[in-house]
Amino acid sequence: MIRVVIADDIQILRQGLAAILGRDKEISVAGLAADGQEAWELCKKEKPDVVLMDMRMPEYDGSWGITRIKEDFPEVKILVLTTFDDKETVEAAVGSGADGYILKEMEDERVIQSIKAVCAGIRVFGDSVFEGMRRQLAAAALQPVQSAETSKLTGREKELMRCVARGMDNKEIAAELFLAEGTVRNGISRLLEKLKLKDRTQLAVFTVKNRLD
Image (cartoon, rainbow, N blue to C red; front, side):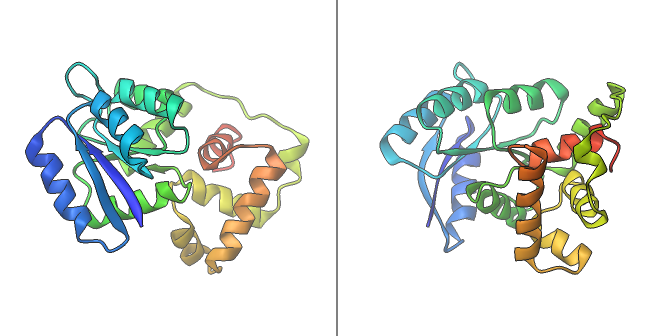
């Protein structure tokens, strides 16, 4: 069972999200918070697996909550669910340690899938958020970095990297490349080890930076 804390300053939205998540048999709502501080206090009391965090809240906002929770409860995953996908808000969330960032316009089922993915250790970004990150990298005019690592990549490994860079999860990659999900998962793990990267986000950035996408 995935225990979730919902942090949003609008009561009707908190309650609506709780009702939506409550319909899934694998998710349990552990508590509702009106700001980042209440979310932190609930983490101390309820020990949730995931915090669904809004960014713009009065006094103790999402950035404050993410930072404190990650400092005191690093095992708790934080998925930002907000209305805003501007550069400043995304950077504030990611810089504070968020494990994912999706928008409130997303369908209910995709929100649930995102919670499960983040709980499993997969970083999740909404389409518009991910495209914004790609545009920022492109605007920075990053030059390819030729290295022994990139020269030794196989065609299949580059295909996996391109899929990750497009924000696809393991199931979507498996369907795209006609592979088993286990094969995709193992392939990405080997890539992270081979390239000395920590997670899928770094792999996506590496792919774009080295013009492998």
